[in-house]
Length: 163
Image (cartoon, rainbow, N blue to C red):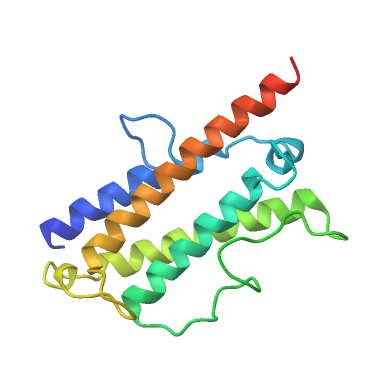
């Protein structure tokens, strides 16, 4: 594997699930949460943790799609960017586990696409835009860390509201 691609994979892995110096990554931020915690909103029109998880999965899908040249419309859920959760009439525990699995599987697909890149690929514009491939890959890692921090804050707010 090319050295620059190896470093990018390390960055993407640390932001998502691998041990890192900075603290909680995205997958770690959602470990062990209750349905009450993942559905709680700090205000009525604010996103909950569950919606943030699906938002992160969607953007992993989007970057993957742009890396490999897939057409839009293949994300397993209807819609884009933000997805309301939980859905009425569906058992929330099973639905949450399924959506976390979607995040993990989508990350795996993205990681596989990144591993196939060459150092030269990192300099070219990604499919469907002018943003360079390397910039997209670094950006998706930053996106994971941003939302991991957001989730950590929501968890603290959720816990504090019960005090």
